[in-house]
Image 1 (cartoon, helix red, strand yellow):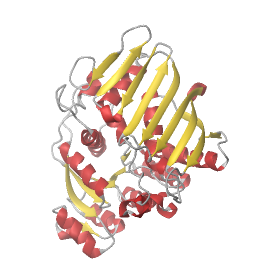
Image 2 (tube, one colour; image 1 turned 180 degrees about the vertical axis):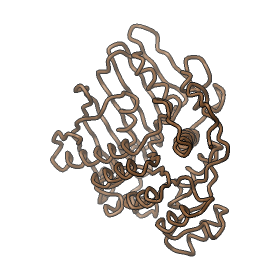
Image 3 (tube, rainbow, N blue to C red; image 1 turned 90 degrees about the vertical axis):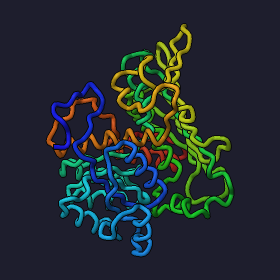
Image 4 (tube, rainbow, N blue to C red; image 1 turned 90 degrees about the horizontal axis):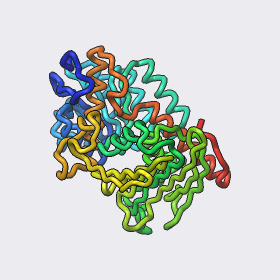
Length: 394
């Protein structure tokens, strides 16, 4: 057994009887950051990887990860097959490849009975996303999707407040993700940028598929409302590019609640400019990624409140288990990734132990969230090509 019994679903996440074994598919910067976060959770050891289809590059990468040669693979198909056959094979894999490889890689591991945590967007096509939802259901495997912004403790607190009715009935949802790293005219030539602007790898969108999906998921996660319709305008605001670098959207949620969604990579001075504002009949909440330690709660007619991440002082017990340091000692994006890998570990361990998880215990985004994100991307693309017509998300 990996989990101690019985589990206290109201308390801190339990320790495991051993660290879980994690495999890496994809060798870029994102995989290194995620591995750092997985180790931070103290519930994972990285033991294998498929870093490149080129044998020399794969071996060099494996050396950098301190992995033995026999656990270094040049294809995810070989990795899935061989790791599934080992008594000490990986318990789960992270998939951090370019978008067009997500479907095939995830399917290979699901077919081998290995749990998956995949980067977003889940796939480039709705049909592929739906196929992964079905494959995950049939395999019984855990399938997480890396909408990591939902894993900040203050975001979990924001969701709890909204669910408790702290701002009343929601009447508006506004979210934006502003970055500036694509401002230089020659940025498209950078190696790590080329695939993001290549439709054969990035899909029909670039900015929307990358950061717009984070914004859409976050708005729905905190509000508890489903994004049902949108009208979108895609723009190339800087040097010519084959895909958009900016998008502006008018949105509609369950119950015809209106909102806005904006995303761009050409906003000088904005690095992690993800901002969420939700307004209701009795107040509102506001959150800013660049000031992620704090959540603003406004109750109409009363002084504004600033809730800071840490133990006590308004933080819900279910949120405290995601807190690592005391109030006043900052956390950040690596800790949010660590929270995602902690919840992923709990889900993987519970599946392998045959333990039924209590509803609401884990807030980890799953394969259905990933598929919803692909439908959002498709709807925004269809709207933009139709000159901003309203499109329902199906």
